[in-house]
Amino acid sequence: MNDLFEDQLRADLHSAAGRPAYDSIDPTEVIGEGRRVVRRRHRTQALGVAAAVAVIGVVGFLATDTGRTTTAPPAHHSPTEPSQASVVFNDLSTNFNGVEVAGPAWVRVDLDPATGAVTYTFNDRKGTSTSAGASVAPGGGSITWGTGDGYPNLVVGVAPAPATHLTDIGVRGGTGGSTSDAKPLPGTRYQAFVRLYSVTTSVSQLRGFVWADSAGAIRTSDASVKAYSTDFVGLGRGPSTLVAVPNWDWLGVFDDDGASSVWISEASGTFGNQVPRVEMGRLDGKNSQVTVAGLLPAGATGVTPHYAAGMASHPLQTAVLRDADGAAGHYTGFFAQFVDKTPKGRPSPWLTHISWTDPGGQRQESTLH
Image (cartoon, rainbow, N blue to C red; front, side):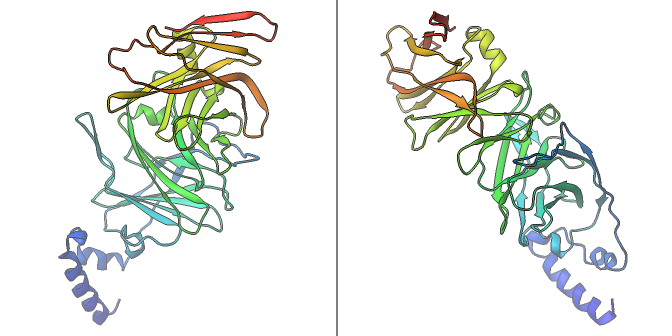
């Protein structure tokens, strides 16, 4: 750089450094960076199954070492001026029940629309590190995620823009909570997302993601793992969707308020060998909106619910669960959603027995505890 340019640049940087958003700028260090090449190294390793897929082309990865610079980010890394196909998430630290979980000052997600290449840039208030090597299908429809060097509680990724109810699935017995955010990647068919977990095992045990596509079909992030679902009419503005992912031992309900779920094996053991179910109550003033949904064997008919003593009877809707291509699975789903006007002191569960007729014509019954 020539002296005149450096003098002007130094003056501009000193002026910018006086503003709150740029208090970390060191003009001498930034100018010095213009005189040398900063090398970064990138390394990735596979996480779980990374396979070419026919429908949604999914790759999962874990970035284990990204290389780190100790300078302020150059202009094109400014978190305040993301370019096309770039978004920034700011101040990702959070508090879980009084426990502080550290996250980066900001994370930037860059997507090359032409190639599908994805790059993550992390800033820890001292410098930046960059993780490359991930990719999605350029035309849309796939998902990728990873975690950056130094942030074992953080997952950052790219998912289809039409995806709703994007839900992570770990393993049975996992603990801890998470916070999340998502933003569309401008000019693409994708959105970027971040999730900060209270415990690192939530990241290491992450199996994958499930979501609803623009047509309402339920997809998973692993082409070899099928999700089965059906819609029911509840009390919300839109339908409630019962979703089962047997290979991941997961059963959930998507509705206007988000997702509620159980492990199929755990629910079967707790509520009866044949009837895994989700049961939840959301308090609304003095009343509680109750959802009861679960799985019966395929071909079940004549389903009859039996509710807790003192409760009014509410009919169950039933339907066959199908995969994203419309093929029937091995379950009949049941669903009821109603308002309980006396939730205080209400015994749990709301649904105490359920009976049905199997395909052979025999009447079956399960007691729910």
